[in-house]
Amino acid sequence: MKTETDRSPAPAVTRALAILRLLADSRGEPISLADLARGIGAAKSSTSNLCQALEDEEMIARKPSGYVLGRRNVELGGAYVAQFNQLREFYSFCESAPLLSQEIVQIAMLHDTEAVYLARHEGRATMQLTASIGSRFPAAPTAIGNALLTTLTDAEIIERFRGQQHFPQLTTNSVRTVPALLTKVRAARERGHAIDDNEVHPGIFGVAVVLPPWTSGDQPLAMGTSLMASMATPDFVARIVAELHEGVYRLSNPLYRATLN
Image (cartoon, rainbow, N blue to C red; front, side, top):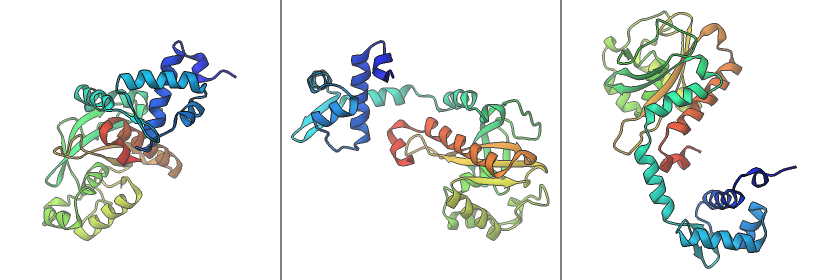
């Protein structure tokens, strides 16, 4: 059976990248030359040559007990971050996702008590009732709004949602009070995603997750999808949630991705 290295047009490059992956996975713990050779399935002598080349370029650094990643990785990561466009990547991800590619998927930000929609992937399940780019929807009944509210404290939610005007009765299922909203948001925090079960439009089931801020000064976003309620079986929703979380990973700042695992 051929290995990844055997199939590679440049085996030395493939092995060098494997070394970098091993060191990245070690979370700062040095790895000995012998363990690196074992990890990439190569002779110790050839692994030593690869390590020397990587060390010369400051991709790795030698410590008394082994090797760690070098400072050049930070420079490369910074260069990648500088050219990364989060919304462009959103559309690319949606096109490639097996399930979400077929659904309407949106990104929104929180403004006071409303979700403001910033991006929308149409999919094939066109729904005229869902929000378009630039639209505002009340955060209380919507899945994407509830996902955004999970980034606030309970006290902040109570302060923002003083007044019945923040609880429009879009359907008979729409949340009506602050205590009921807090119950929904707490459940969303615990399960890792928010839902809207026929609260905005009859027959529509919403699912959404938080998209962490790109930098510490940015607002968090949320990414969600609207499904036909008849399709929203527990198994299908679980698969949709898994793809949304994969999207969060793809769209998150690579420098902070370790905190998402």
